[in-house]
Length: 155
Image (cartoon, rainbow, N blue to C red; front, side, top):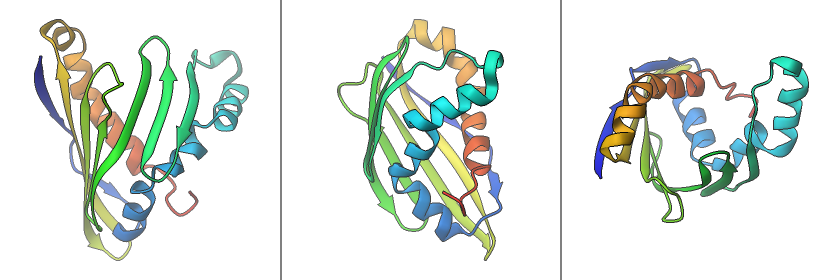
């Protein structure tokens, strides 16, 4: 297996650098997005348009997050490094089928905005690289876009 690196474009976030860092460096905020109540609310809002969301057993605290996603299986990751207010490093634990590291880098623009870049290091065998490599090129920017659009002042 080889580790492949995917880097997002630099995104502008319309929130203060310190606020963004404070929220992202505490994984418990994910409970508001992916916890059972949030997933049920999304399914109810989307009705028949709702894709099959198979996220189960979701648990997140300050440093750790774990859940089961069909058909992938169990996923568990943790924050391994914080460099306030500019870098958060996240890594899967040994129980996860595929290993990855995700880095979120933040730089202030002014008191109300910051820049962000997301980097994914993931171990893929040749077959997986051929199957999902192009999707990850696009996906890393979708992840960064999703983070940049979070309502940081409300989470």
